[in-house]
Image (cartoon, rainbow, N blue to C red; front, side, top):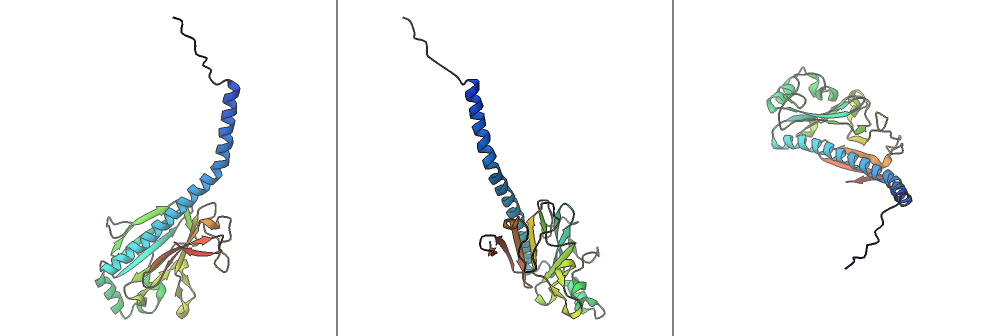
Length: 231
């Protein structure tokens, strides 16, 4: 009995070229959206990680592990580093009770960024679970140089250093926010005089905010609503 041959045909070269062209068009149209989504996700992930670093070191104050803590923001050409430091109760008491120390009168002297033996535990050198140092390569901030903010259970000792201080003398005040945005050529996030983003990546900009009591929140700039929206 003869078996009828099946009429089987494959793709010819022309059909294959057409299929590849269609795939290319679809990929080209989808890539910008995928790239934008990927960048947005990376910035959001880093902003949330930064928020957790602030929350984590403030939690150590509430637990009594440290009496005074710092978040040091290291500003570099190609990355930003957040390092946390802690001061024990006895060390803080010595500084407060030292009548000759500027600690009690000058905000800028409390949140020391440079003295190596100022802090009992330093996240950049200690293998301690209470402190840490994290480097971020995909984001930048609104700061021009290394800066810091310091917290204590007694809000009276709330202080800062570097670009996180405004004013001078008795009018010195500690800023209570850090702007985080996608690193894209600029070494700092661009803001207008009213605090609104001025660059084309304004939808990838976050504001990490804190109070002197250690309450931490995170807002994202909405280019549609033209306002900061809590996350």
